Image (tube, rainbow, N blue to C red; front, side):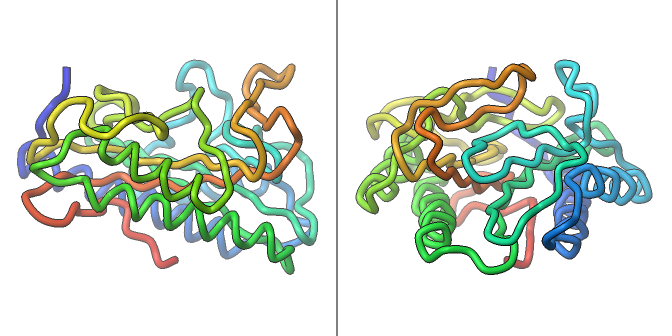
Length: 250
């Protein structure tokens, strides 16, 4: 069931979203060759807890860390470890914070040092596909209008859209109805209503869309070994432009 949020609930989600964005900003400032992905996780957890919240991901479906760190061909759910970032990597940081009963959720893909023009273009197209999608995240559209806009933009740029993992509703629960696929036909899905809160998150591959999960049972990677990028915000549907609840200085 899709829940419509009250003004009070939206304010709580905005606070959770800003803690999420603050933690991501903290992690971004640490990104450099030689930094371990576990150090990023430790810093994010510390920031979230110092702001009176808890990491949304920690313990969720038994996930053992506070953030996911997905490098290069890793699509989502990369596990923090002693692995060190390297010059030329691209890294997706997915993060969430839970405060006063509500969640925020967001992701960005960052460059580590100097990256190839091809890698930068993938990051840029993934980001813009999100913005193309949320042009339709308002009253008067249907959910899959967002979906189709994301897919059309990414594929027109020569990339593929991950089918096996999707965006979602968010609020009291990290994952709520509705499911938000990143590929499909416009005009389908529920009508968008004022007060819906959605985590819209394109996952775009440089090669084919097929993915698989590594033996750690978490890390999802591209089957063809090509790069993948991810971009996500928590948004509120309104009568006009959607309101971003995870504001971040890109």
